[in-house]
Length: 366
Ligand SMILES: C=C(C(=O)O)c1ccccc1
Image (cartoon, rainbow, N blue to C red; front, top):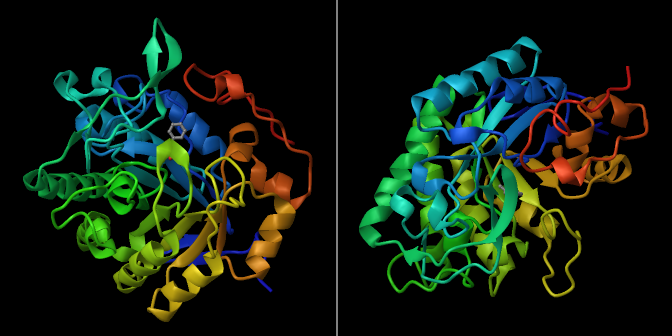
């Protein structure tokens, strides 16, 4: 029976163990430029089988929170090269999560203070983070405008270009952020997408943009270096769909032939309950659909896992378990899990914004 602590292959990625660090937004990249402190932070956690970076904007339009990194400007790429070099020197593997926030943004963060973009002009009842007088401040998102059909190929190109940049920066691959009510998830789901053109209405049409992006990235860097993150039933950022099981069965069947390195599935509400009585979902059935359609990518599971739950998931067939908040406070989480050692508790007050406090100052066991 597989163990959390044994090596695993995910596409082209040979991982030392089955523990991944989930993407964690930390708002510590002023002007979207990764800092030396970020290189320290990721390197401290390099014992993870796979590091997945915090969500990283593919373009200025893709930005939705203050001080989150980008992957489209020279200084940003130089910052990321410092991160990947340091992680590789420590023996780690790292992929970057490619992000377009869509409607989860604010005019203050958009080029020319424009309205954020979305599949439809429907405001998300959620908040984003602006920095006001140096203080991270949760602020209502702005009313978005609906993207014109003619704009969509350009967004697909932005994803392709970001994937090319990622490899040039030394990343081992990319993770497509298709979850948590951001742009690609907005197009997928009926609560945010009420278009009447080829990108709205039917399940096939609503999945179109996500699949065009996935195919473009696979064409650019290869499926073996491409993962995707999905959240079938999360309510994050005011997202919902009328029939998630049918929607994701279709999506996974279409993703199966792409040879992806992994499929990363958030179970339940992101950072919240794993079971949602009003939003039932059969994850095992979804994995079966993916495998029956020929999908061979590693199956990565996430949300509120601990050692016992992770062992059970791996015994039941999960290939990788992603841990989020535990990695914030425990840079040596792999060792602590293996030894069933106590975990440091994360300080929520320093999750978003700031400097070394609550970022690189958590103690290790040894
Ligand atoms: C990128 C995020 C996600 O995927 O939920 C995020 C953004 C801001 C705060 C927490 C998480």
